[in-house]
Length: 315
View 1 (cartoon, rainbow, N blue to C red):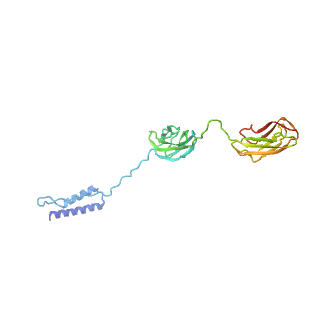
View 2: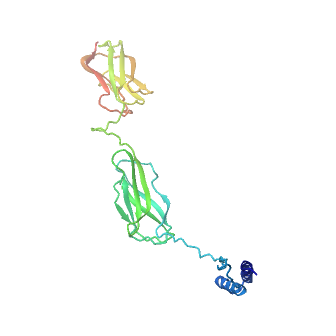
């Protein structure tokens, strides 16, 4: 038998042995199975030289099967991790100039480490709003617990939009809560001019008081005219006007009720006819009063009358 044929037979025998070992599922390892197969093949075949050369035995490689997978790698939970829950003072809340307020953020400890009193809120950028640079926690916060972190602030003295940024650092100064903020709107202050505060009121004055004739005669009819103006800054309600032929009379000579009041800047004319029953020397006074019952709140309560003097009545 030729060398090549012997080698082919040996190779076939090796393959049969390898397959048999693999299927047998014995206790041999893969390396032991390979060594057994090679030994059997060498015993079965004697390699002969052919024309001064050596016959070559093919290389046999067996790949391992059913390689077990390693255990899964666990990703460790972070020591410091926080979840935002809620906050007070919504963005854009209006405040008066220099108004104080408290901003609160509610966070939950979602890490594995307990937050201690050396954990702190830190101002980092923007408008500080008179707040502290840092503020330590006032309590420990175990994993799964919630905490309210509050800071006292003050609105600036001028109108505008203001926003400040804060972070939370652990006891080694490492930030783990980033970019929590407070944003407010300060309303423009009302301009207050110097001087006393002026409250607008009505102000009734007599702009005309006349008699016709100017010096009447006893037992003769005469005509009286009175004009009243509201020179104040607001409307006047109902009021009464009375004229006394002589200021010494007990009862008025004519009375007018202005039931509709008088708008600011408007004027009302009232008139009447009257007859004096007797004569009076020309050393008397005739007078008219406006808002007799003082029902109108006026800027000046001392200008509600007008008079004519000297006045008298001819016999």
